[in-house]
Length: 186
Length: 186
Image 1 (cartoon, each protein chain N blue to C red):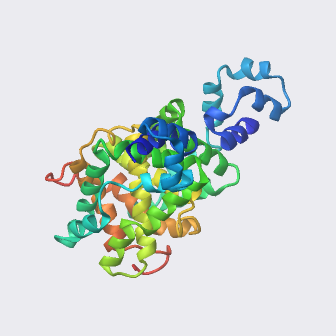
Image 2: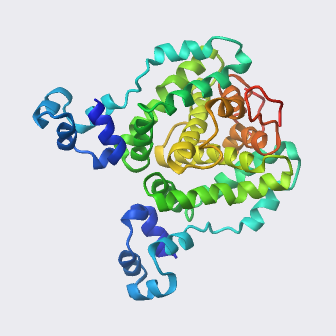
Image 3: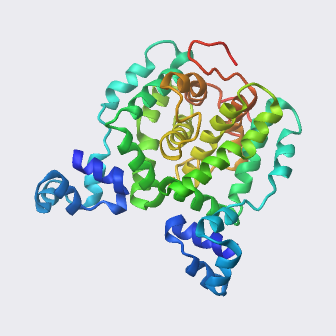
């Protein structure tokens, strides 16, 4: 898994090969095939963040609802900043921007992952829209911070980003989100 | 320019070649070199959106300040949805995710482009931070809508996105943005 994460992060989905991953892990490529099958399945397995979302979500939900967005951003940026996740995250975004299989994976992660769990726990209408709106903000933040190196986003601390971006996530997940320009707050 | 935009959109910065662009335009590669020099300069020239930002920014600033964010999102998504800009936009993001030269271009576009002009016109402190925060949200929106095809983001209308995302851009450019978790609203 460590070898696969390293290879996907360095070379993207298309560039990494089972042969290369096996070489990094010091095993026969046939063994990798035996346990993981096609590259797509290996990528899926390697893309699991080293944190159990079942643990992360209750931690974000605990505490006052008004500051939930700040807790979400602080936890997620803190996770992304870890040396173990950072190259994996940039690898996923890089691959999602260029490869349809990786884009489908990113789509599922954003549509069915922790944001939907959070939006459902908040128990307001339109959980899917709320989760995907939060996904756009966090994906753009990740891209600006880690891939593009946009300043000051790239050098702000997780707490500073939580203070600045948290209210956006809070509004998307648990605040007023109008879904038509003329409609009532939803 | 049309041939260059087409080539960069289809193949990304690294994949497109001066030779290919010249062939699409039906001219000699030497002519392309003569007028544009290196591929990097051609990419910069081709990446200009077919809209003058000097026109766009005053239109976004006109009207009530409380709905400026909605006007920004509606104008920008409307522009992105045009057949002429859409492939260029996906080409820029794709290249920015994988190529350092294109990433530097995207960084400059986000740091010095229309968002900074808007933030400066609003005349509040921290225009650079405000502009880059707006950039993260809009870049994530573009990536979700055009590259990843995240639903319902991909099929919402520009007006629906303006209603849902506009208040985020409004807050970043002209509202309360706290830059430290313990600080006062800035």
